[in-house]
Length: 254
Image (cartoon, rainbow, N blue to C red; front, side):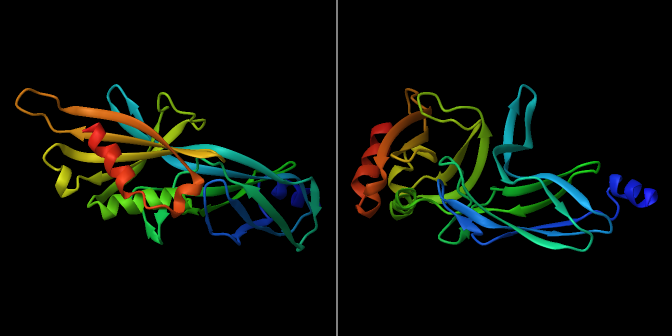
């Protein structure tokens, strides 16, 4: 019996953990639901709690270059302490709201190259090493975000890449320690004055701040470089034709 307890403390014969998402695709500000499936090991487990953590792979700029790392950006406690008997199967349901600023990983089912988000499950077991599970998380844009991204494609922009940058976009209501950049190659009608366009969203329950960063081409007398402009749209504008609006944003920036 003492030997079994020792093995349990070393993580041997402990419970199995599997997180099953019933909402494998969510939207910013939406609900992520599922169950944490626990399978008892060879010894009783005194589980102090289960925590779900949303993590994202983020690029961090340094003086001597860039590196990437996993950033936790939301944590949820999903159960009170419990005891799990040897061989017992137990499902712990959960339903949590993801942050409104959660970055997008796919648009209309098409993955954005460069995006990696996940759900990390941590089970705090008294006297034992933490048991965990990790699952990918897919995030589709909100309707008004989708409308803007769709409008850029209709204007002739072509998706190039997406990433997450550590830092803060000045002048916005950003609360997360990083922001998403969705990069496009310039549409033909703007190509004479623009190399590329990057889009970032800072979203709240009431509105979406749309941050456009245009890489302007330099002319005979200079004038090149990045220009950043922030615009605000409401969630109710998702059903509107935003072509003229977005085109006006871009032409004003250029």
